[in-house]
Length: 154
Image (tube, rainbow, N blue to C red; front, side, top):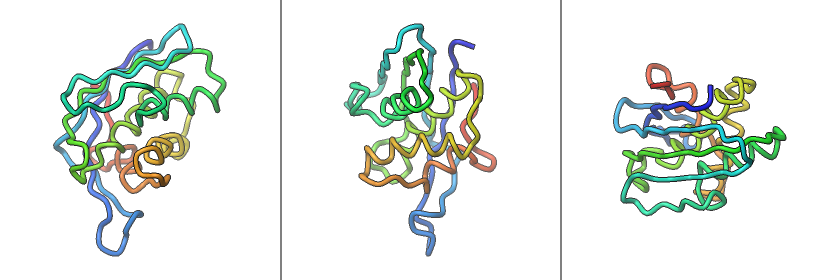
């Protein structure tokens, strides 16, 4: 498989006394992401929305996740990701987590599904670190595990 299109759910976290631990995926809104495995080591990020999020890989949560995966897994291939963001950044619905988790989830499938869910979450947390300064999985884990609404292939 050289490319994949996925749906990534919004999430709600910081539930009651489970601050930064508990979270859940919800039906809507959700982001759609198209991720393609490249022959070159480039990481290309594009957005189709009007949120003016950075497209430079090192400044984008999805880009950072892909860069970390490439580095730690010694991948020779790169990735192109096109993000159709419907989860408004800053809305409290895990917008950055959706981009980070979606990038890790899709990239893992494209490289042969070699990572466990826990390892996928580990890489996705690098995106949350860029967004918030802290690596935490309260929004990431529901995107990956998600009960009835995890990341899914479209």
